Image (cartoon, rainbow, N blue to C red; front, side, top):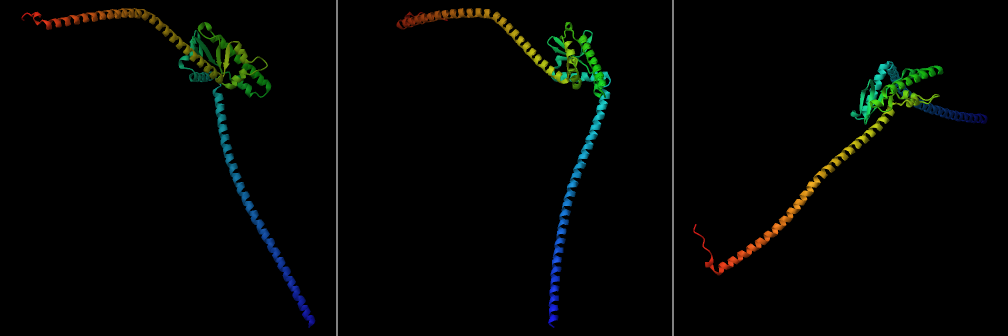
Length: 326
């Protein structure tokens, strides 16, 4: 019996130990499950955040790609316009007309209309524009040597580029010689120099660039032909405008001086008669004063005679002579 009780107690203890082990295992499993659930939740949230950020990035990328596409379309259109412009500028006559138009706009924006003229003729020459400075004329001729300049920019190798630049220099020298020979005519009223207007800043920069040989600009200045770009032309015209204002002020001052001289001559002509008139008025005043004093004396004597007559009448009324009957 004791043995049975002992075995029963041992079995109960073993069952309790098994229950405790099972409870511990259950709690451990629950903790693991909760940990996995938290990890899954956090992972899902992180994944959602990453997906949202990725979506925004994809949207930004899409918008930027759209802008890039629009910009590429504009660039393509601009390239087409530039190509058409280059095709348009190929004929020399059109380039010349364009240069003259730019030149006329520059002149009209800076100088008064009376101070310049397009297509000015002197002798057998007609220059694109003339600037009038006093009694002199500054001739301005527009030149646009573009073909060989463009060849030099589009050349694929150095030798071809040098050859194109050499041809460009020959074009510029030929234009300089033509301007010097046709438009610098001091005997016809021009200044002893002329301006060669180059409508493109890049082409002018190549003319003014220093190379191994003397620059084309130095070559032109030696022949009294001054190359000017649009910016330099504006600066030159602004200087001319200031000079013209100075000439106008000088002319106005000269007119004022002439009028003052004329007034001085008129004053000399008026001063002598006025002096004589003053002398006559002075003599008249003296005569008036003398006559006034004489009149005062006569009045005093007349009053004395009247008083004596009144006294005599009062003393002897019969002595008053009778008036004859009317």
